[in-house]
Image 1 (cartoon, rainbow, N blue to C red):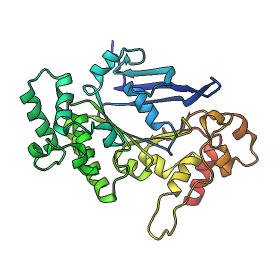
Image 2: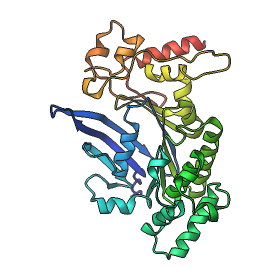
Image 3: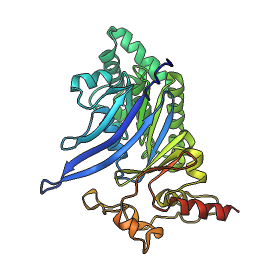
Image 4: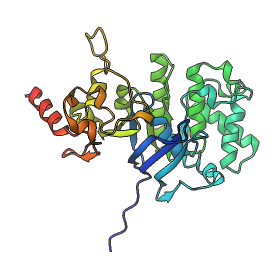
Length: 337
């Protein structure tokens, strides 16, 4: 008999994250999403604020805020179910199997503790080493992420470091126990362009040294394209398109993806394109396609307003949740010819 196929490293299936409105009615913030991450793969999850990107990875880490819970679906790590694990079991895995780089390092770091002390705690939590060995590990980690004079800088407090340097400290903390998966949640938010590039170079170097996979959460389609091999586009708590970076950029099959691509500035552009309207509140999500109120293609078409489109496999191995994906492909091919 042939050997059994190995499961994906991370497998999220039909994930639903729910809260309750003031009346007590359930509200689906993340509404039935599924995806996988393989060993060493870089996956970009892209969408506007409020699309459910960060909640998805917080659910993977077992760190959902109070009042939110996973009510349906499965999250499996190398075939083992994470949903239902105790806090103690999840703490053993966080940092050791998967590490997270949070969006705001000032909230991820304790402002009244020295940076070196916080990193050393992350090391000793999963490794049976002495304080001096943990301290040496911290200095090595800070050096690996490009912090100059790490022995001296480790004694500083977070407010004494710049935003870019604090983000490097958070990357070092995520790397502390050589996890197989790094999750980066908007790692370049509020940083200027030059520092953004430095942080992403640091993150790429860290991933290369660990041979780890990376899930990159961002609203910046270009940033995901520069770093990922595969992309997932989320809108209103749902996946609307997924595929390789090449397919997403050359053959987008969802109007929302096309809108995001049009919003990218190119040489000669004076103003960026903005998708008209705003995403719906999860409590007021329309019964059909959530993007229909903002979509030019849906005008006069009852399918868009009455029937929710499911994520369907396309001939090019991408997936799209649009009733008229074939029409979009045909129009794109017609323009190309």
